[in-house]
Image 1 (spheres, rainbow, N blue to C red):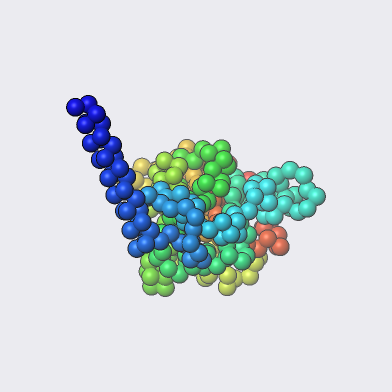
Image 2 (image 1 turned 90 degrees about the vertical axis):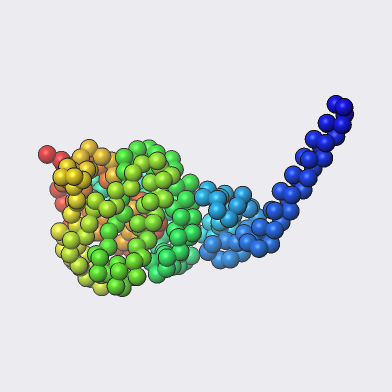
Length: 288
C-alpha cells in the first residue's frame, strides 16, 4: 500500500512538472522575452507576463544595459558632471557647494547615444513597461547611493498642465519613474504636492545664462489638509535629464523653503557636460 501511494505521488509530481513545463513553453512561444529597447531576445525569462518584478536580464539585453549605465565614479557627486581625467576623488573640481540648492545629483548615464534615445522615447510615449523597467534599472544601479541618502519621499519634476495634456498627451516620464522608485525604496511618492504654477519657455529654447531666470518662481508646493507635508523630509527629486540644472535647482529651492531637510536629484541622464553647470555663484540656502 505504501509503495502504491509513493508511486502515485511520483506520477502526480511528474504530471505537474510536465504541465508546468508545457505552460512555460506556451508562454515563451506566445509571449517571447525581448529587450524592451532593441527587441533582441533575452536570455532570462520572467515567471509570468504579469510578474511585477521580472529579472532585469529579461528586460534588457546585455549590450543595452551596458550602454545605459555608467559607473558612479564617472560623475561628480555634487553636480553630476563628468569627473575629468586625473582628478582624484568624487568631485569634478568645477562646482562648489553653494552653486546648488540640491545636495547631490545621481545620473545613470550621459545624455548621448542609446541613453538619449531612451529618454526621448519616454518623453513621447506612454510605454509604462519601459518606464518601469528603466526605473528598476536605475534603482539596481544606484541602490547604494540612494540608500545612503535615506530619502523619506520621492517627487517628480512637474510639467505645466497645458503642456502636459495638450502637447504631450498626458505623458510626463518623471512621474512614472518617481512612482516606481518610490515603490522600490518603500517610501511615499508625493509628486501631487509639487506643482508648476506658470508656463515657461522650454529650457532648450533659452540661452544657457538665462535658464535660471526663465524658471524662477515657476514651482510651488501644496499642503495636505492645510498642513505642510515636506517639513523635515529628505526628498528624492526625479527627472529624466539634467542639463544646466536650473529646473531641478529651482525645485530644490522651493522644497527647502517649504521645510525639506535636503534634496537629492535622481536623473537618468546628464547633459551639457562640456559647459559650466551654473553661470552665477549663489549663497547656500539654509532653513530658518
